[in-house]
Figure (cartoon, rainbow, N blue to C red):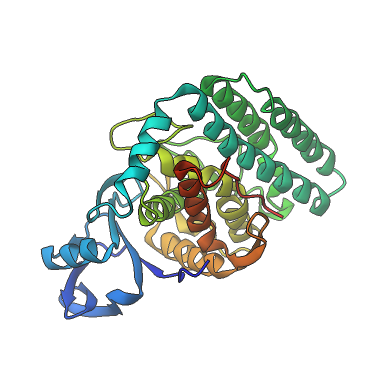
Length: 345
């Protein structure tokens, strides 16, 4: 991979205003300049809540292929501003044709889920080795259960709906023991019963949801950069306003990137109870201070190197999505017989 790992600018300060000055992006708060960043070094912009952007900055970002996403203060996706699609139109036509062809769609859905389940099993086995003698058996049993679902994917006649069912069963078994990944000393402050969202009802779920939002943004950007349409997926059904293919691609990295970072932040006490607040609706949400802590850790984590088994080289984990988007594009063009999911080692 020769692509540079460019910075993503996350703007969380309410009332901030982004504008363009020459070839530089400026962030102002109450008319005071807080940040200057050359557009050349920018990979994307994510605005949370009441953040304004000048039309000139949006135009420059669109022209330079820098995606700008607008989310609510708590991370719900609202809209994206992107430039003209990159890449060959024939690639997107191939993507759309395969998405409508049941056999091809099921093959790609199987690959995404196989990657997710293999990495989930790896996470469980790793946690079992690192956990106490009391917790290890339950975690290992979870790994065995996920392994059974992984082998079930080998059935060649599975439909996409059946593959979704297998993925759901494996995810349920994974989250049944997820609370055991949290160190014993932190379980009172960070209890976890099950995976819930819209809204998240506890601190662990709030943290996971926020990290999954960041992962989805990066996946959509990687796909668009390689000429693919982030909205048209194979595992995830088309839905207005949803990046189906970005959700497909991020499945493989949920455990090694988002989940692992969430647990590190909790177990190393980088994130505390004071970094969360409860809304009147019952939702548990990160505070502004909490979001900044997570975003800083996210950027650092993306710089860490990881081994890519298929490419047989080390690369920053932040570029894995770009590597997978490139491999997917090569498969859709017919250069690869099958899409090789990312394998965490």
